[in-house]
Length: 321
Image (cartoon, rainbow, N blue to C red; front, side):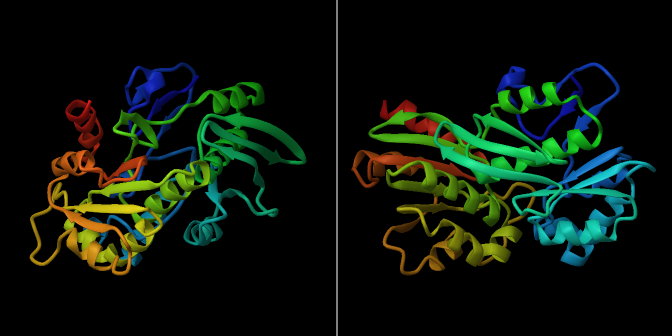
């Protein structure tokens, strides 16, 4: 097995975010958040998406795309770029890349094609197509976005010559990263899940996944992360959250930024005008009293965000019993 470094904690690795393996390969999760990925010199790259984010560092989308182009230019001679054909910007960057490219996605023309047969709350049944071969796979990961990610990993591993039996076994066994649709516990008729989603696309995918696999009402507590991101995406956050039955938006988690006058979680609630149950909640600790009062319908409670909102689920379990 290769050595691996990822951006989140992996329960299967005893909660660590790394695994020390053997052999010649190091698999590293890199992103554009601070531009540091341009210092890598990879043999192969899996490019999942290029979206408008981390502009607090890059400033403009043009700068962000230029950073990705600089990163892809670092692929070693003879190396490979595997890209998601579902993402327009990734596809455009791949078209300009001088080296070998491999596409993956749901579309028939993708070189590694993903076909989903069944979505359930306990996992996903899919088939991975490659070079005229079809490989059935059952994964404990839930949702079309996870099926797409599995297809990307499959394509990358096949592109670099990984043995097929071990690859399929590893994909089928992987149970995910902490804070991705992670079940926290039950309290007062609510099944509580926690997710790191802090961009509109991530929130949309997470809600789509839970709505497809659960019939119960879904209540969401979203903690915006960064004033700059909140100001830029207030309308997009509102539309991504809108399908939830009940929505609470907290104050912004500042992280590395100083407060910006006029920027607050209230911006998102204002753009949820017309939703029957959207509320600004300055302090997420106050949600316990609302649960006691029966304000939330029995069903699911999702805590979303990249800040300290991850503490809400355990807090509710402690105080509500």
